[in-house]
Length: 193
Image (cartoon, rainbow, N blue to C red; front, top):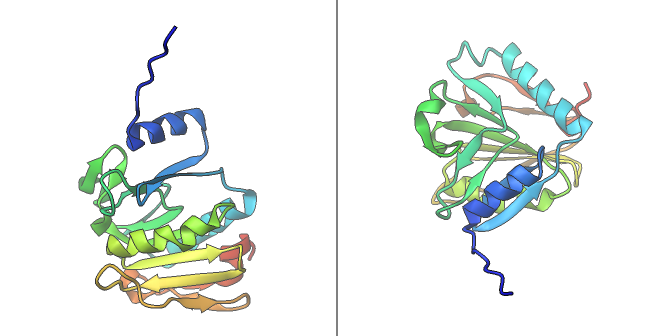
């Protein structure tokens, strides 16, 4: 008996994977399907403490919001999208809905990724995709290399060379994000104070 197979689009395959792997983050970057495992405790705690820091800095009073795990439509390929760990967004970001659960990049002021086992996606394709999308600030807590990497102000679809921060240092959040805030590298890497 012959078995008929239906070919799936990349978007359909991503939807099926997301349903089959609860808790995993499924993204399409540069036309390539990627799957990230659920965060470990240090990863989750770093994001929680990051949110608290933005709350203390008065992000909402400055006219912005922070969110975790909100889809970002990417203009790099028709089906490309990412789901950053943490984002600072305009308060009306939901009005910039593009498709499914993805929002236009123009409402994102900053995205943050805390690396997991697929750290190379955060340090490679996402740098390119986020620059091409015009995201003003991209911050990576690079646990693989034990540093925090800051990209900002893309021009012509590329970020200039990043600024790197080591343990024991603090990094100032760029003014374009909308609040004055210094972040601890150690907290971003480990979730510890």
